[in-house]
Length: 170
Image (tube, rainbow, N blue to C red; front, side):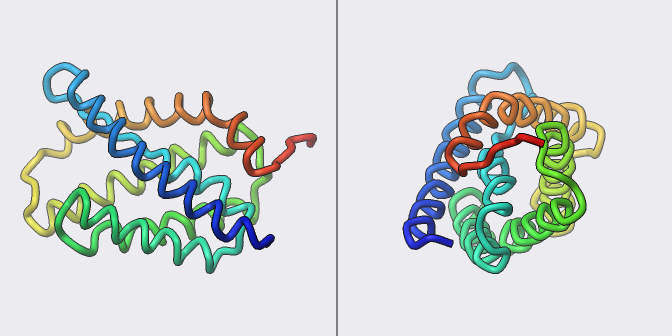
């Protein structure tokens, strides 16, 4: 890893973290009724950073991001501190056996966003932070979130490939 990458990638992750919060708030205000769309640009950037920087460094960065996420959004420490490193490890595990292609990125993103959202829902139910039913969560939160993040990856993938110097000539 080059020296400037140690500073540039965490800054890029912090920028994705801030934009995530703003987009999620925007979509909460724009969507009708109880539909809840969560932006996960941080995970989309994580798809690329796993390939480009060492796993240990990624785990540290995403643990810190999970800590900030817990403090900033939930005011309860532990849910995303646990889930973000697991998600990064899962992405790394997938890329050990799968090639980096746009289709595999879409599938991995869907699995990772599902795991993160569903894990956060289960933790919220476990700690009695929510009494939302499973059906309402899946229909009004999980499905719109998966669709939005899948479309976001389609739009952002060429830009992120240029940023992370990845060429897909396979």
